[in-house]
Length: 334
Image (cartoon, rainbow, N blue to C red):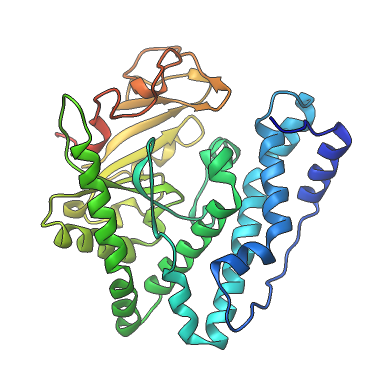
């Protein structure tokens, strides 16, 4: 266990956050994902410290709350500056676009399964999810996660705003990534014990897929064709443009919370309505309530309504597969 920061160190982190203003960095002609981490090391580490301050229990509540209030703003500034630095490098050397496709475009974890990570710059946040987002939790706040989200956001925006030639290049470069994602999704099925579900890829583990509808529809179609339509594409979204994601390509979960109930009008008719039940306050007029939980805190439910079993305080193994639940990953029956 690491050393606990002093209150003076915590205040220094908070001051850094409140005064943060970054300029794009001129990357070298042979820039890489590793060089991005090096160039932005200070900002990435300070953001991680800010998350630890906001989520931790040992700091004074006033400092933790002040850090919480800065989380989304700081994450977006860091991501946006990384993206601007990459775009400037691509303008100087168009051939360096190949660097974007190094590493893993899709992620894979025991909790999330096979998934795509996008930057928070793609979000249209609610007052509750800005600082409460899982992006600010532990590994999702780590430097490599922030870098990957920023890179994926650049790829998405280049496709969304690109010519047909550029779009063809991007989809071609992602073909091998999608094939690996399909294989990983199928492997998950083989490892299940005592029950079966369809394999799927989750969009987006963080960030908003609906911000880039043409790119996401193209990706979902690619995964469908490469898998012979055996692997589903599942999207969680709060975005006003959710209906731009083609119904036949997606299993759609539209997310509301107590600060954004008016967004229900943006939910496609075929979407499952899910609810972020902050502080355990659940709704009965939705398909599923997610009791918001983080590393050290699990909300107790109050009210009536269907609750995701993976988010209940008493649940020991918090994965959908361990609970044999695929509710969110099946098409909603009208």
